[in-house]
Image (cartoon, rainbow, N blue to C red; front, side, top):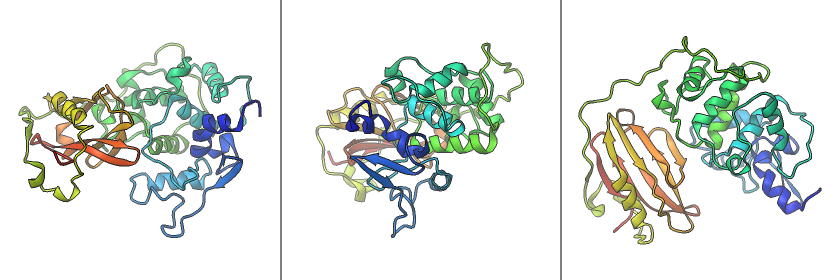
Amino acid sequence: MGMSLKKAVIISVFASSIFGSVAFAANTIESNNQVVKTVVNATTGLPFKDITNHWAKDTILWGVNNKVISGYPDGTFKPDAAVTEAEFLAMVIGAFRPNIPEVESQYWAEKYYVVAKELNYPVSQDVLIRNKPINRQRIAEIMAATQGKNYAGNDAIRFLYLKELSSGNDGKKTVEGYGATLNLTRAQAVQFLKNLKEKGLPQLQERPATPSDASQLPKYEETKPATTQPKLHLKAESKEHPENRFLLPRDSVSEPTIQAFIDSIKFENGYLIAKVPTNMPKGYTPKITIQGVGIRDVNPGQEIKQSISKTKGISFDVFKGNEGKNGVIIELPSGAYYWGSEK
């Protein structure tokens, strides 16, 4: 190799773990001079130990059976981890063009960006942006581009619905329900790839230089929200609330972060709107859980917008490593909230 093994593994671990055939052999991972194969767990009968009750289990199994994904050396797939623009682009282009020639570059995904540039796909030339989590809005625009369309914003989302390349983030085909501002997860990335392979065109198409005609796209309008807005209020002291058995021990370090999230909550036009705090303690990571949809990684400063009528609640949680430390649960449509740890 032209670089150390350690560096090579770091920059290509996602490529090998989510679509092994792109970087290494079909369903393997190279790590510390060893080849780690995807092995069926003797207890669960599944290839990964963290997908048993996950909504995307069947989709992930499709990816394994079609040899387009594999997991990590610890036997996990990490389905809810965020995906970067480079990782998603490499997955899609690698799935349709598995024999792309290498290019001279220190950047592991450069050859995929060369193809993307040739096809006029809406991706970044800035490495810093390439390596950041990609949101679902940009995914819609890239997906539309693969089908030979130049759509942006809501038009790209409507096109995905029209071609059955997405069913929305909350199971309902509305522009708002697509969840454009949410980061893409590994499980969702595999679902989008499966949709492309099963319902999209057989080959990647070139994106036109000018915007495509959107006049005939269905609107997929959001249903009219309720006129009565919830009122945010503390439901009860932690020791009294009905989920008492799940209470975490007090974590004073993260309390200001949870309070900042609570303070940011507002209700407007049928939506709960909040912002992920930027005062995240060192070593802590934020997550949002939408009841009935699942958990999502989020970034400090990211806006959260959720239809009040389409979920019974959301929770904002902070983790230190894999351990949940604190959180807040907001019930909808009542607006009642309670802390996830003792205070």
